[in-house]
Image 1 (cartoon, rainbow, N blue to C red):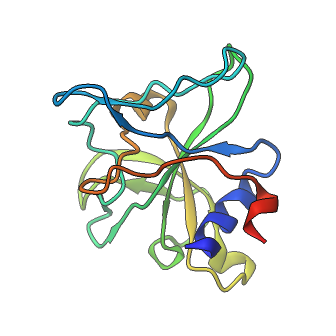
Image 2: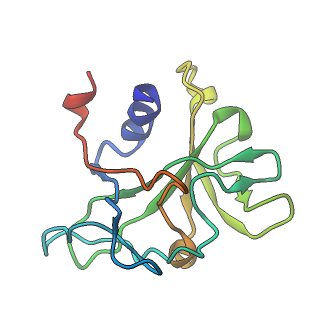
Length: 154
């Protein structure tokens, strides 16, 4: 797990990543944790029915893992990413799908296999118009929870 998080942070090192902290707002709609400071933008994630999420099928043979987003000053719109295993992608710029024949959701921006890191991790930037169809909640677990800095991963 530590290696997975480290790989994602290497890609996004210029701007720290923030993971949403889900809290139950109501039985019907999830909350996304405490609001970040006013000077930090937050993605407009979708609700429970949003299909792009950890555990969703990718290209019909792999699954997506955690959702990440950049910490940017308001009113900038943060870019949103989702991870998968590096053996599930082949090249930078590759477009990935939701399911075997589903919607194209994003572009591979990092593939550990291409840099020989030994970590089985790829990062896909989700198309901006699909962020509202993305939910960072891990089904059945509620996570991820919290924020970390690179210095905490050593």
